[in-house]
Amino acid sequence: MADYAGAKAAIRSRIETGWTTTRITYQNEEPAQPWPPKRDNGSLEPWVNLEIIGEGSSIWTFGEPGNRGWRYPGEIHVHVFVPVGEGIEQADQYACTIGEIFRAAKFYDDGQGSYVRTLSPQVDGGGSGDDDGIWFRVTMTCDFIYWHRG
Image (cartoon, rainbow, N blue to C red; front, side):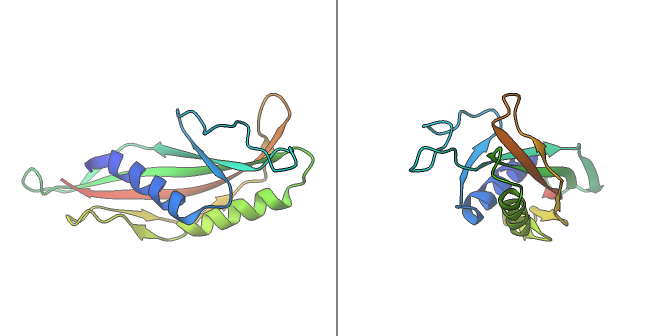
């Protein structure tokens, strides 16, 4: 897959493979039904949302077309949502565990020298997860660079 779209697909694949504890939602996609997720007893169930933010691109090696190195930096945000009133511990634990999926990793090799390299994950202090006061949110953020040859 060419350029930045390859990075997004690789990041999505990595979280889908590494995280099976809760439902995952994605930018500009309808979540799976039923929504919101609920436990067997009917109470709300935690879930996470993957957000990938690109921060531009730059060339890092020159050469013939198809053999140039491109650098695409960005940020991976995984927002962990837990029901208000359940405390912060589970949200923190989930965010830290998801951070370890991405910590200092190199993944997605298209066989032509393109790959994603991630740095150190950070977990914020949390805050309101929605305007209705139903969800509490903690976010894991991890910088990445997608190195692409093309």
